[in-house]
Figure 1 (cartoon, rainbow, N blue to C red):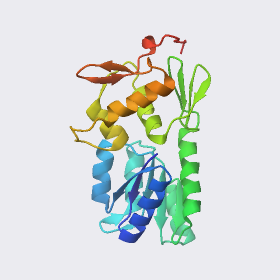
Figure 2 (spheres, helix red, strand yellow; figure 1 turned 120 degrees about the vertical axis):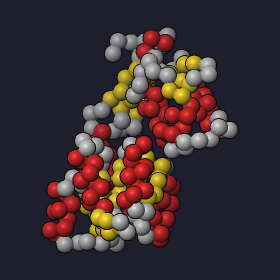
Figure 3 (cartoon, one colour; figure 1 turned 90 degrees about the vertical axis):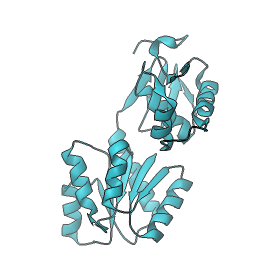
Figure 4 (cartoon, rainbow, N blue to C red; figure 1 turned 60 degrees about the vertical axis):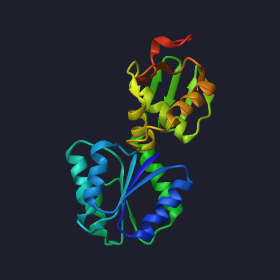
Length: 225
């Protein structure tokens, strides 16, 4: 899961980045609202964890901005402000959850999972015989469940969200690994290979010189829908 942490305390930011990364999440840390806005201008994290007291303002303002623009990315306020009226303000302003410092890391993990489930409830992607249950992190081909790593899952989702459309390696690096420039890497090709081994050689088609595509018409056992 791609998580944006907006936190100006170096100690807390390091703790969250290390702990969430160890749980298999991809974590980006922004230390102020400006850098968080820059990140959100080009990427869509699956969860935002935002401190309220930041050097350039209240993290809740970021949540309000996202909601005004129609962006529904789940947001958890992580803050030392513990009064009931402040928690109510956070929830009414569009935050999905509110956790007071100091906090239990296990509780934070549970809350992340909960808001992500609510956000992804009912979202299914289907491309030919491939079915992806976003909320349950479950992939199957023709009814057979296939186990994928978090990175393999994210790459498959990135392609499945655009069936029939060729996505460049650069775009996939940006969406899946948050890498905008790395001309020497072959990680996209490597992970496409992993997906082909697990889901079938016809799951992703290479378009030479351009990128990769999942096309409903390319499958040998394609199904309706």
